[in-house]
Length: 298
Image (spheres, rainbow, N blue to C red):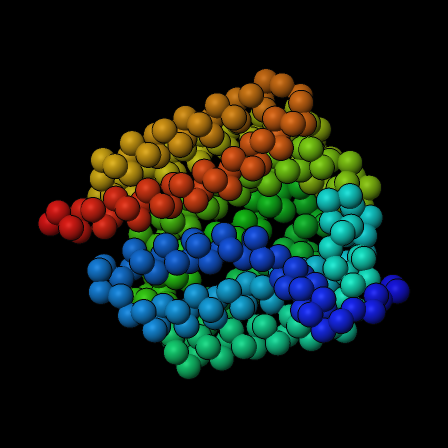
C-alpha cells in the first residue's frame, strides 16, 4: 500500500474518518437515550459526559479496528474503496495505533469516572463487533448480521448501566428493538450493494439466497421490528404519545419494506436503508419525550 504524504491536520481528519463518525454518532445517541431513561430526572451530568466520551472513544476504536481488519476487502468494494486505508491516506501502523489509543482512552474514562460494569460491557461489545463479527461471522454465514447484530444493539444497555450501575428490563427492551431493527436495515444495504459483496466473497443474504428471498426477509423482519417496538407500552414504561409515534413510524417503515418486497428496484432498497436510520432516531426520541412527559405529569 502506498501511503500518501499528509500534513498533520490532514492526517487527523483521515484518522477521524477511520473511526466512522456517522456510525458512532448513532451509537452514542442510542447510548445517551439509555442514560437519560435510566436517570429518572436526577442527572449526574459529569458522569454522563464521561460515559458519552468513553463509549464514543471505544466505539470509534472498534470502527477503526474494523477498517483495519477489512482493508483488503474495502479496497475491492465500490462502497468502501474511498476509506482512508484503501486510499493509502493512513498506514496500517497508524490505524492500529489509533484504534488502540482510542480504546485505551475510553476504557480509562469509564474506569475512573463511570463504573466497571459499563467498562466490561463496552469492551465486550468491542470484541463482539471488531473481532467476532468482523473476523469470524461476517465471512462465515449469511446470518452474520442476525447473530452479530447483538453487538450493534448494545448502546442503550451501555448507557443504562453507566447511570444506574445495572441492566434493567427496560434496557433489555431497547436492546431488542435495535436487534430487531438491524437485519432489515443492513439487508436493504446488501440488496443494492450485492455485487460488492459477491466480488469479495462475503456470504451476505442476497448473494447466497438471492434478492427475492432477501426482500421477503426484509418484509417479515419489519413486522418483527414493529411488534418489538410495542414492548415498552406492554411493560407499562411508556404511554400514549410513544404508542402513537411507534404506530406512525412502523406504518412508514412497513410501507417502505412492502415497496422493497414488491419491486426489484435498487433505489427503493437504498431509500429504505436511509429511512431506517431516521426511523430509529425518531422512535427513541419519542420514547424519551414520552417518558419525561409522564414524569412531569406524575
